[in-house]
Structures are given as structure tokens and as C-alpha cells.
Image 1 (spheres, rainbow, N blue to C red):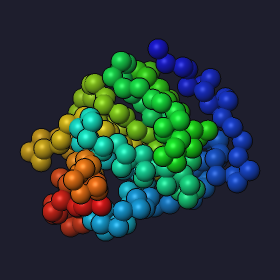
Image 2: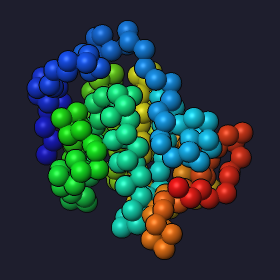
Image 3: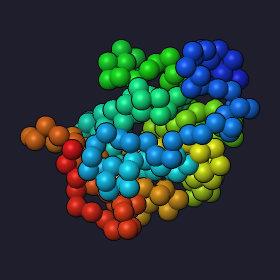
Length: 214
């Protein structure tokens, strides 16, 4: 179901700019404290962008264009060399990837890896233990316990990378992942031709701001 992580990592490409390094050397290099999203309002509310070392949770209803926002943020970060390797994890049978479409949005497919599994922490635990990936995206995970979420937040902090949990529904303020520093909903407003972001928790000062239009 999933390709062994060790096999995938053994085939990582070499990069002349030195921005991608082996895990043994990874901790020795300095990484950006925040990843600027490119959306001024979101960057302002989040205090300058997504913070490395933190877990965030995104409510992105399927078919409403929310994933475009995440793809744009990650692609921009790769282009600016703020992020290197990405791992995108999806459940069995839920979603599909059409590589040319992702590449057209600016994602570097040579530095983006995909895995399909319903048992994320069982099958891909090495991806969270070793500080290899700059960002790990859990897209529509089927089962994450409270303990799992706490573990993910700890690994993000220890490895100083981004972990994004994408939900296929709108998040609610009264229920959700208490380990996510930032929780927000996102969708595309076709009438206004712009993305809308609704921060549930994690805005500056811990106060939920009004919806943000990009």
C-alpha cells in the first residue's frame, strides 16, 4: 500500500544549492522561524506566517477550493527556498493526485513525496521521527486520536518542521484539536474570486478575528 520510506529516501535527488541535506546534518542548519504565506492579511493575523515547529489544523471542505490556498503557500515557500522536501499523506481511496496540475500551481514535484495509507503513524512513523521533511501534510486522515495529535505536535516541535492536518469539513470552535496552535477554515468565494480564511484559534493575541478575504 505504501512505498517503504527508506526506499524513497535512498533515491532523493541531489541539489546544487545545498538546501536539502541528510537527516544527520539537518539539525545543524538554521531554518526559517516562519513561512510567509504570501497573503498579507493571513500573515498579519498569524504574526508573520506559519511557524516552523508547530502543528496547524485546516478546515477545507472538498470541492470549495481550499486546498488551492495550501498548495499556493507551499509552492511559494519552495520557490523561495524556505521549504525543501514535502510529504503529502492521503488515505486509501479518498483523493487522487494529478501531478501536472500540482506542478502547474508551482509545486516542485522533485521535492514532493506522496504516500497513501489509512494508518499514518503505523506505516510512516519514520517520517515523523527523523527530521527529513520540512513539511508534512496529513490530508483527510481517517483516524487520529488525542494521543496521536499530541505526538504529532511534539514531533513538529522537536524536528522544527510544519505539520498540517487538512480536514474535509469546516472546523468548529467548540470542538477540535487542542494541540494545533493554529486552527482555521478556508474556501474559495467564486462570486468575489478570492479565498476566505476564518481563523478559529491562533490569531494574534489568541483572539478570533473576522473572516479574512485574500
